Length: 243
Image (cartoon, rainbow, N blue to C red; front, side, top):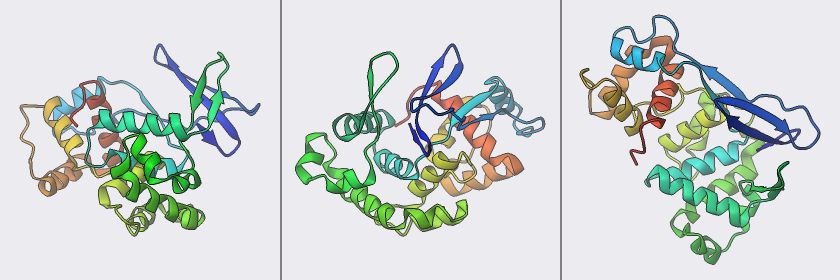
C-alpha cells in the first residue's frame, strides 16, 4: 500500500502482522487493535461471548481516501466476492506494478487521475462498464476536492462525500470507516451487520427493519458503537459471504 513516506508491504502469517517499508523508510503501523471491552453488549450475553471469542482483532486503516471511496463504489449493489474480483482486475490492468522482496509483483490500486483517463472500452474490457459513471465522478471530485476533504472532521467528511454523484449514505459511511477505522461511521444497520448479529445470536430477537435495527444496535452498543460494529463484521468474515 502507498503511504506518504513510500510503499509498505503488509503480510500476515500465523496471525502475526509484519509491515515492511519498501522505499527504505521505517514502516509505521496503520493497524488498530479491537477487542470487546468489559461490560459491552452485556444485554445480549450470547453476542458478547461470540465477540469476546475473537480475541484481539487487528485492522489496517486504508491510507488512501480515494481508494476507500472507490472500493465502496465497487461494493455497491453486487456481492462482496464479485466486487473483490473487479477490484483486483482494475489493479492488475491499470495499477502501478510494485516489485516485492520475494521477486513477485503486486499491483496497486490505480490513481484517481488514471481512472479519469480510462475510456469506455477500457472499463468494459474488465467488466466495469456499469461502474464507470460513479468511479469517474468520484475520481473527478477527489482530484478537485481531495485536499479540502482531508481537513474535514470525519462526520463532516461522510456528509461531504454524498455531494458526489452516485455516492449515498452507505458508500460514504463505509469509505470513511475504511479510511479512519471509526466504525461508528459505518452504516451499522446495513444487511451485513444485521445478518451477522442474527447468525451469531439466533435466539435473540433482532429487528429486521433497518431503521428499527439501527436504534436497537445504538442502544446496545452505547459508547462502544465503533468496536461492536467492527467486531461483528469481523465475526462475519469467518462465516462466508452474504452478498
